Image 1 (cartoon, rainbow, N blue to C red):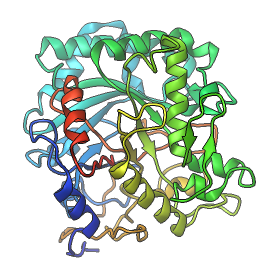
Image 2: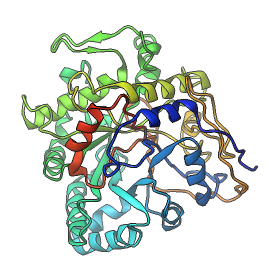
Image 3: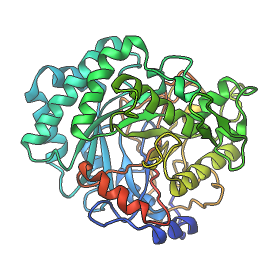
Length: 421
């Protein structure tokens, strides 16, 4: 089916007009999305930049570094976060020349035509199915990859990070002030945080209020999980901080856990927390309470509003929340419950999966229909309230992630700030 031509969403146009950020620090379009490819009916990758442009998306997170996909984004100005698949961690961790070879093949070969701003090393490595085999490889692989980028003169342009499930936190992790990392993960978390502090890269977390709600629909208010304005707020008695939505509470829980490792008074020792994945399914099985088009529309619409208008979380108000929303397409080959295949903003034919609250998603102009799907690997599963989550993201990366202070200063003078990747 051909994708139809239509106008970009009015709200995105208004947000982009109102945003004040130096052109040297970021692309003009600040909306981003996770581009997962676990499907056999998805549009060809070369048609995706046009679809993204139709909704004002300028930043994208990938889960691998497929050359064909990277070439599709050449000379588009779209900022990319690419992924090093889990299978690459052991050799890169063991041999710095492997990291150099990977950086040359998947980054140097494509820049500057392809605007790669970050690399995520693995996905949910510390809590995934292969955690016992890969956890000890994570930081060494990140160190070797960062060293490789430095040797190529790319370390100031391309950040090295990784994305983690909320399962890295000990349970219970509520209220936020009581959150700590799982004791068995501390040998890996401590050097990881030291790496982030030294290189200035963010700590990415996959945060899903949906999982908290579906695991306890009678105990978690739907409006609170959906980020609705006016929902009954929660006050953390230990800190006095008031949380108007569950996503802020989840992010601050990670900040508290980082602070508990680094220093009780450091609020994370300067390591910024960003949401690498969040979203809400538009359909699910009979027991997947709340997985409806209406709720997906409310959550993602509210997320855009929240990220555009807020000035940070209650714990760290000076650092605006940055999030990546999962996902661009419904992916029909994802394993697990029905919800896994229904996180997309779009159906594979390019039509909107639902109408966002306060925002219209439209189809891009495209005359090419899709018959071939390309399956990405090492994408996270969005399954279950245990934190083994999925995608949807927004990148706040600049040409050098060390320029965060300048970006924050510009944002503080802006009337709106939007980062949805």
